[in-house]
Length: 284
Image (cartoon, rainbow, N blue to C red; front, side, top):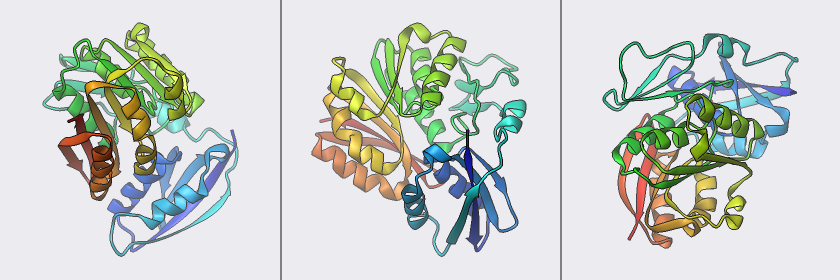
């Protein structure tokens, strides 16, 4: 695969600015990053690079008085994820020890009620991001037993797998990225939930041809995609169903709450972590 190398210059430079920029760039397709003396260097597949989305990301950067410019060039051919694949990631504990997300190199050292093993080939989708952790923590609190769940933009499949391990009857998941679809299927097999997880490749337009309805709709996607897709989510939602949404910032909550009200949904709960937000909306 061909990659672009994007050099970001951040002024004034801080670690918080680097971390937030990496998280936001990861949401629009960037895979790995290297810290530089001027800011950050990021890598993205040429076929997935969306300059308009990147410009919007910088325009709406949540830290005040931060100036970011970038330069794009073709990256030399090599496996940018090789180091990540070799090292893996440290286990992530969700809630009060009820759930652990780990890779095959870092197995639980003590009994954990819910364990999710992720064979991740990219630095994103491992559960390290605040939004993934908040959605998992929210799932721990919801009555998922024998419920049907839609995982929109499934990535590596963490959220759907978590729901199944928490008692969900079945999960339908989709992602626009073929790699994510295959990785979700692979991770479902690792976690022995593949019989109850159906993964599709495409965007929310897939829902127009799905006859099934869901008790829970979970989506960890950026704000603009959520606002665009929420009406389709609503169409496949069972009566008294629940939306669990993340992938956006705390200042975006009013926009999503307003959109939910248009669709007959009420904001009933929210979480915040390092500028990121997760909200729960229900019918009525």
